[in-house]
Structures are given as C-alpha cells and as structure tokens.
Image (cartoon, rainbow, N blue to C red; front, top):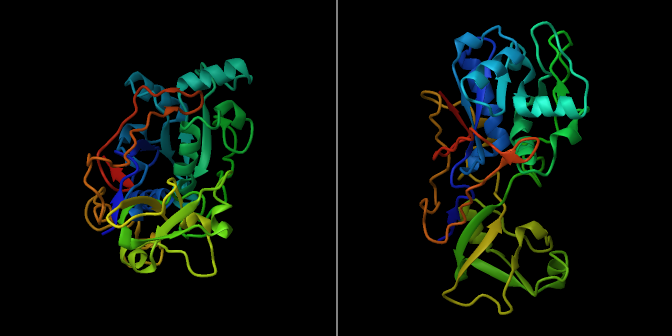
Amino acid sequence: MVVFFQEWCAPWVLHAYSTVALTPNLISLVQHDFNVGTFAQFGDPSEVVRINHRTDFHDMSHLAIRQSLDAENFTDPFILMDEHTAQSHAVWWVTTTEDSEELTARWYPPVTHPGDNFTLWQSHILIQDLPYQFQLLSGGSIFLEDMIPGERYDPYDPHDPQEPPFTEGSDYATSDGARGVCRPAVINANFSEVMYTADPAITHRMGNPPPQGAVALTLEAAVLSGLVSPQPGTPYVSQWSYWFYDDPPRPGQVIRLNAEYDWDSPRWPPPGVAGRFPGPPGSLPLAGGIGRGPQGRPGQRCVRRTFGRPGLGLPGRNATRVGMIGGAAAA
C-alpha cells in the first residue's frame, strides 16, 4: 500500500485582516483562492490563511493598522483585504515596520504625510499568487530590497491610485499551470508497486553525473493512489525519482520516492471545490487524512521550517504554527 507523508509538520499561518465588513462571500473568496494557491486539495498545504474579524480596523489606513498591530506586539507581515478584494481577487501583503524603516533609510526617500513617521512598504498581489510568493520571500531566496521599486513591492501612499495586482501569470488551478510550483507527493511504496529503469534516455536528464537508475510507481499503484505513472514512450522525468543505490530495488524493500499528483483522479477534490465548504469557516473536508502516515511516525519526511522574516532573512518574532490540515481558517 502506498503511504503518503506530510512534507510539513504544520502549515505556516498567515494572518489576514480587512478594512471592510467581512461578508460570507468575501471570506469564501479569500479561502477559495488561497486554497488554490496552496494546492490544498492534496491535503498538505504549506500555508493557511487565518481571517481575523477586527471591526475596529474598518476604514482605517494601512499604516494605522500596521501601527495598531505593532502596539499589540504582533509585528509580522500580514494580509489586508479592502473594498476592491471581492472584484480584484487581490489583497495587500503588508511587511514589517522594521523592514519598512530599514529599507527607507538605506535605499529610498520616505513617503510621509502628516502624522506619518516612516514609509510603509507593501505588495498588491493576487490571492492565488500569495502562497508561492510567500515561500520565495520567506525562504530567503529573494530579498525585499531586490524587489523594489518594481512590480511587487511599493511604498504605501494613501493618495496614490491603487496599482494593478502582481501575478506570476500561473494558473494554479490546473496541473499544467501549477507545474514547477506544486510539489510532488512524498510516498513510501512496496517493491511490487514500483518499476525500475536504467534507461539512459531517462537517467541522463536527472543529474550530472546521472544516477544508475530511477524508480516510479506502476500504473496500477498510481491509479489507486491518485498519482501519475510514466507512460510508455513518454519518459517524463519528473514522474521518475532518482534511485540513490547501485543495486535495483529488491523484494521486501520499502521504496521512498516522489510522484506527481493526478489532478483528474476522483481521489482528490477538484480545484474548484477547494474553497466553498459547507459548515463554519475552517471546516475543510480535504483529502488530508487519506493514506497519509500519522504525524510523528518514525521516518516521516516532516520538516519543521524555520523561515527568515520576509525581506531581510531574520527570524520571525511572532511566527505561528498550527497542527491543522487545510488551506484556510478563520478566527
């Protein structure tokens, strides 16, 4: 039996607030789009969004909300919805006061108005793009100052017109659009459920020097598991996994490998269902528990990430982790 393993011990929680009233439609839209961006239908999202009901933030400026949260000792970046979110499917990613002050002092002249004491930096971004962009920034592969001035980050100026939201242009709701962004499943399979090849047409594209062999799920095992198996005549490399050993797999051996999700499999909820759930917010009937090893199981590939604070690569001070499966939550 194929066993799935969670890649993350717990998803990273991104806190969201709103300058307008939170209607059921607005909550559902944000949850849906965020779930699409995290591929939550496969049950192992790396991020969730927690929608916080703060009526005192209605009609407040972005800067005032940042300062109010700072005063409450919440100094991490946050998501901000506004009156345009329901139509634009976009939100604001507001960075930390520390990043804003340092970037303004080091690189850019301040944009201030009466009562302002520094320039707040933020990004207007499509909700479906936010999880991927968060991973890029939080993983330290992109520094905030390298992204501004430009398409992603801009100084907050309440007198400027709202710029179009940033997007990578990927269609995260389809397998082709998500290629290279959606991580493959991490699984254990029995010897009878895998096939092995030493075909140079496959292995020579898997590294330098190439491995001696590669493994993949058989078609039958892949269909039962909601995954994809390489088809004859189409040596699609990402459906094969690097085999690290000199000898081929042996009977009785348990093989760990990566496998692509089959987006058309009935095992997974379709992408269009990944947002409008029955029941109260946070009720997420996803495929998270299907066939996955229990948390803490020996040998589980479960990574507890220590992200740097977005922008400058420093440890986050109010990072929140929750033990939940799903792509969205509401508080």
